[in-house]
Length: 73
Image 1 (cartoon, rainbow, N blue to C red):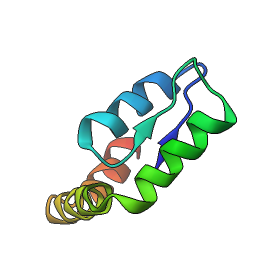
Image 2 (cartoon, helix red, strand yellow; image 1 turned 135 degrees about the vertical axis):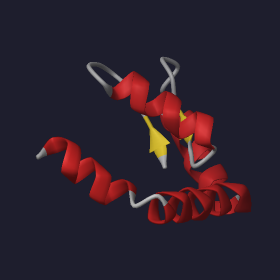
Image 3 (cartoon, helix red, strand yellow; image 1 turned 180 degrees about the vertical axis):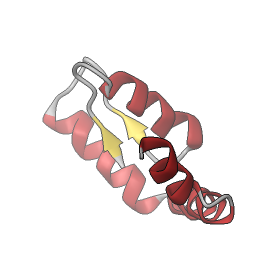
C-alpha cells in the first residue's frame, strides 16, 4: 500500500501502514516522482508483501474481523 494522508483519520491509518511495514506513506512533499518511487519500492521490495501476509495471518488467528463485527453490532 501507498498512503497519501490528507485529513480526518487518514494520518492515523497511514501511520499504521508504516508501523506495520505493509506500505509507505507519501507525506506533504507529494510529487509524481515521489509517488512513483514509493509505488515502485512497495511493488519490488519483498518485505512489504511478507509483512502484509504476516498481518493477514495474525488477523485470521485472532478472528479480528469477527471481533470487529461483534463490537460494531
